[in-house]
Length: 333
Ligand code: PEP
Ligand code: MN
Picture 1 (cartoon, rainbow, N blue to C red):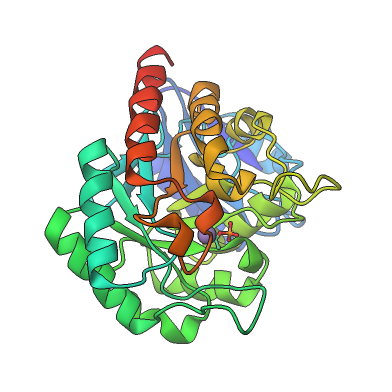
Picture 2 (spheres, helix red, strand yellow; picture 1 turned 180 degrees about the vertical axis):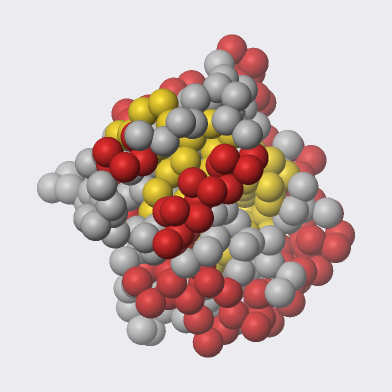
């Protein structure tokens, strides 16, 4: 339910309305815009008579929300959310490119890549320390040591770091991590979403599950937000379809639709979406053109010898060219 207040409603009136709602075990979320103030009601509204609220002096309209996601809903929060990633802003007109290897492999590798992507204009560094691999025999990531090396790269470059949390038992290792990634395979790991949402207010980069609908993606964002963390960044990385020529199938229209449904920023991952390094440039440019709030791109200093996702990794030189093109498109959009 959304309550739009009349102009001139004062703080004391708003507080007493909030008390009424809280007494009905509804959590009021107040959003103050330039032209209107809106109160989003989170919780079970079955026992609340909308007529009772509508009758209040300060209330203009009461509207029921059909969608099952509330906190993530644009109707609850009409303005774009801007997520602060340790000083790097993402959303609401602020565009950010996260770049780095699929996985951290060594100090020279991560520090070297961090320096080169920063020089090209990346604003955050990615690198997996805990890797969700299809095969138990494949490289599983460096774990705690990988996070230590990411911290070193952050110290050297000042770039905030983005890395994936697979298991909540590892959260204590994430103190220096700026953005916590929840990967596609864990998008519906509801316990992980609840744990991470209640433990921290750090930004969460939530990747779309490979067979998840947009509503399911938004419901997973809702889990994190309902647990107490409003700082969610959605990531479209393609879904699995009958097509096998590309690693996944990417529908860029999703960016426009997610912006309509939700106030949360949307980042596109052209690397996992395509699976081919030569395609990353054009898809990154297209995602920028359609209005993505950011990109996450895999870059490796030596793709043929990468321990993970080498085929889709750009070299630092390719990334530099892509950044130039992306920034030109940003000037237009
Ligand atoms: C990754 O970012 O390296 C990754 C594993 O991505 P996804 O969860 O989208 O497959
Ligand atoms: Mn990868």
